[in-house]
Image (tube, rainbow, N blue to C red; front, top):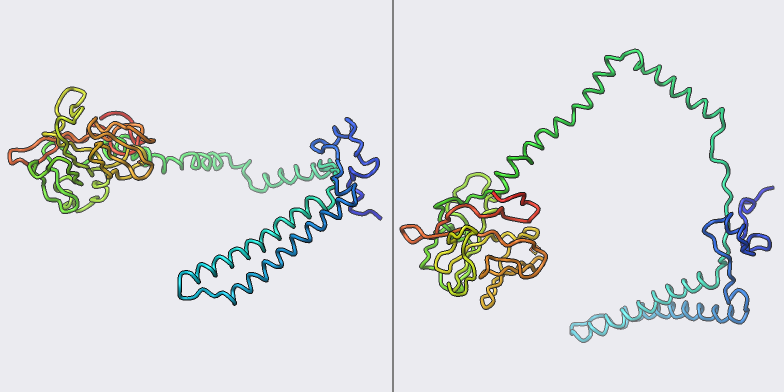
Length: 349
Ligand code: FES
């Protein structure tokens, strides 16, 4: 009668491959020559390992007893000290219990359990010729039954319908992600020439005279609060941080074309981090640095909000500002660059 071991070859057994000849190893790729462990060949070492495992398991038993004892004997009382003592003893006992089991079990498996390697011979995976012929015939019969071979026009129409179906999803998608999405929705915000800068969230227009050196204002476009629809979307793109510096500290307040984008040391920058879009709002007055709390990108307000540290790859877009006849701060135009993470940016407007 065959046994499960008939199909296994014990490599450690005599003649089972333990001689490690090149031919044997080539026949059994991946298996190295079996090397007996010290505990297998030396009874004294075997006994010592047994005692170690026994010790670790005993330690675990004592740990468990310690947990149960501590649970009843040292309940957390009213004082902080008694809670600490209870937690400490419970924790230590639990650690001893788990470590004893874990290390002891590993020791036992690694050093005492049999580590012989076996090879299972594979039978032939190829089906018989007869089975293969039946399978092919079944496929042919299925094709005949479906009638597809006799209805060419039907098949053509079905294939065309399937091929065209993705267009019903792709066309609206391309329409949105294409020009409309890219240019109108992402590259432009509510800001336009003459829009007053207003406080967030009250929407009160800001006069330049109200902003003192060192001030930081959270700003939204005047009129945002009156929007009936899409208010949050517009706000998410248009939020601005307004800062007033001593004009002598400003290293740059001009557009690349040389137009002045600030007013008497007051500068306005998008609050949306160009890394992955967190709101940048931590201002360090002494260094003029703006810090994004998410991944610590740091921007220099005195120098066109260039990145001085962190993962952001481009400056915060600047909102060109000036004052109107009544002394209110107003935008000269929309942001000079698309706001938000750099992956939104495709080109300058
Ligand atoms: Fe600002 Fe990452 S989102 S640093």
